[in-house]
Image 1 (cartoon, rainbow, N blue to C red):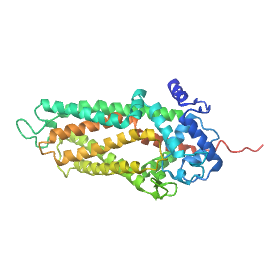
Image 2: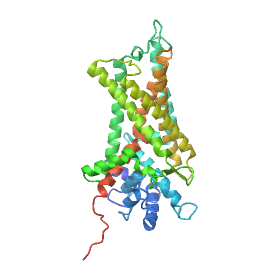
Image 3: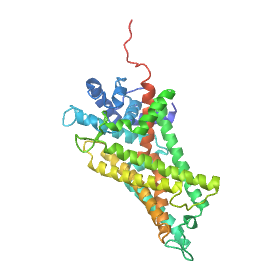
Length: 391
């Protein structure tokens, strides 16, 4: 383990060599509630967190971060727990896990200062960045006399006449590269802290299956999550699926458009029946619906669920997803109108803000969670170190 990572884990309240977390940290609260859960084990069949918990007697910070990211925040354990508030034990696994997940995003972020700023003011930072970038792009378009319509001739839906292709590439390539680098460093730091061992093909296949199906948003029984009350609902799982697959379709549309441009010389704008346009419209519609649904579900969430301090971060990410989808759909619908340049500036500003903030918010949790699921798939295939040995 690298010295910087050891320093991060010390700051989180525990040494990487297995020392217990200090009492003042969220990691210590995870350790406290899991000690109680380990004695009770009523929720053992709910999700992967509890069988992974039973393979441990102590919970140092690295394990707290692993189990917190393995948790899918379905809420089933809170509503089933006999020791949940107002019991004096005050066992609230979803909130304890959410607080540690927020620490994961900050402690493993690169650069760390960016992660801390976004964790504290996620919604404000996201919207302010999007508006600032959109304003900057709109000023650039206005300097060419094309912010509303064109000074000399109609734009005809050709956004490259507002921002040339090479200019757009020079703007977005560094942003995309930075986001991928920061995400890669963060996930690598998290993975090294877990000392998971080498994945087998079977473990990798199981983890991919669980990620793509969002298996553990089924509440441990397949009926869904607890959201506002004790009732089970598949709503969060379905909303997450809309967001995930909508985002992937939008990404596929962009990738296919890039292939068309460089490999075949087919330059945008494309017609509504072209594959990049069809994928983009389908993905944008799914992304808009899913993000709006998630915002509503979060507003209805039971007050004991989750970490109140993380709501700005979550809402910032959801807001950027929604704005990116809606502005993209609006750009598609009104690309042949005088509003093209203004809508293009807004859409590009939102998308740039989304990619800049990807490594520091809820997008990163998907990668950390995938890493935690892979570790669990590796771990469950190994003998438990707690097994009693015969003399």
